[in-house]
Amino acid sequence: MDAKLRAFAANLSGDRSYNDELTELQRVAITAVVLSGTSQRVAARLFNCSRGAIEQTLRRYEKDGNFVSNPRQGRPSVLSRQQKRAV
Image 1 (cartoon, one colour):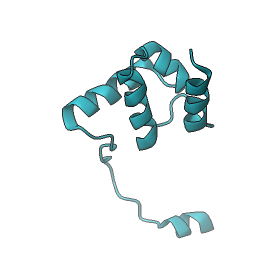
Image 2 (tube, helix red, strand yellow; image 1 turned 90 degrees about the vertical axis):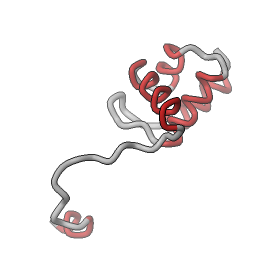
Image 3 (cartoon, helix red, strand yellow; image 1 turned 135 degrees about the vertical axis):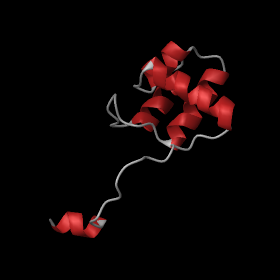
Image 4 (cartoon, helix red, strand yellow; image 1 turned 120 degrees about the horizontal axis):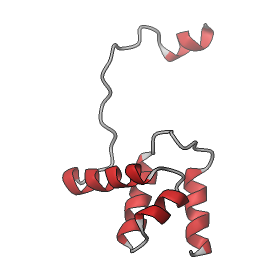
């Protein structure tokens, strides 16, 4: 595995834990790495995520052509960010 690619992925992943949501930039990088010939398994190891997350990212790119997260459902927050910080 190329040391530059490993350093690039580590820089993007940073302190991301395994179950955290991927950022849009990470999804772009994952897609580029896999489309350039790196296996999904190696990409998952590089970006500290599951192979399922890699597959889902690639599927979303093929289907929608974008990397944006889908909107979440649920009740909107009553408190603003500043109010939450004060509490």
